[in-house]
Image (cartoon, rainbow, N blue to C red; front, side):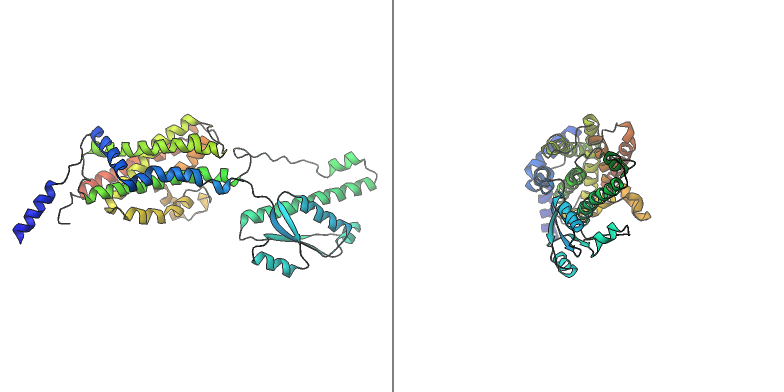
Length: 396
């Protein structure tokens, strides 16, 4: 029995192809393995390209307009009808009349409207007599984007009508019409958005999420490939061999990154190209850093499927830890420290500042230093695991 087992072991061992040890041999062999593995090819190249086409489409309108809202008019006066008319003319709102608040609340519960305005009885009399008067605007706070438009649309309508009332009162007191109009706002406010001039949600979120997509697809593809090599007993190689593998994987990811920054953002009219050279330098550092982390995870998991199971699960937490969708200084102290172990923490803000804001490389040097430090840290971990995880035995 033992002789048969040893014979089987020797036959299996003789079929194992040793991994290339040199940089260029390992580089070319890795490229061959990537294009020969449909799963890795799908994850590394095809999936991010598909994401680049289809992920931005839901945000194509950029700005949310014509939010359905309700109006309850208990006053039925000329002033209330003016308020309703101005609210109906707002591009942010699509108004509908309700007889009472209960009907409007039921419409919110059934997602027919996102909010409503209540005009109280006696509003015009209170305004004419100089008493304090107000209207109430209630929005669905559970959906902050729609709620913002509800508040903005109604506030503009009410503000316009209020300014008109002030002008009429000033004219009645003997002021000239032009002077009365200027006095309604002594210091005019001019709001000028920078970098995202359309104030679109897509232009805000897609460039940041694209960095997450590049990272997660490269991590999963690399870990899958390393897991396959481990199962085939081909994972062991020299330091130059590991550098060749990292170079091949990061080169492919770099090309996909150029597709995002050079074409996908242009297709959807997102701000881009403010510092293209700096962006390319960022990709040249970001991709090897992520590829090295993928090699570490591949040696750690040692199973092809495990990387998909874990990395898909942590994609959303990684995005929130980056500090982009939520201020990093508002995170718990423990998470503020842990977040710097992930490449996207410095990468997202560095990418946005270079590509959209036109920052210079020196202005985002902290991000470059952080990525370089992470690459060195990951490579030391890779060398440590390389020594601790021996060549897999055939009987395993």
